[in-house]
Image (tube, rainbow, N blue to C red; front, top):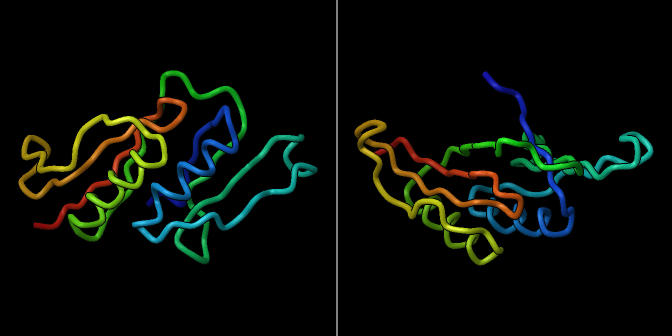
Length: 127
């Protein structure tokens, strides 16, 4: 089981705004901002479903190749809400919400590129 993961961001304000809005339909919030005196002077943001941060953003040159991270949704409505919120927050479409039967029978997902071009997915595995 994965405890936490993260990626590098080039613009703290853009990324914070994007992830705050895009992940809100999943119950994610900005939980922690690590003080810069502990990080060597760079911004580090921790998002998650309270009380635990499990998705971390680090101020640095964006990862190349870009990262693909998928968040699990409880239902199709959360997938749809993520997609709408992510586009409204400045994300770019990388796959509209819908079934992906080539992955498996009940796979329903949506894909959006974040401000740095990382492929962010939300997926539901329930019918």
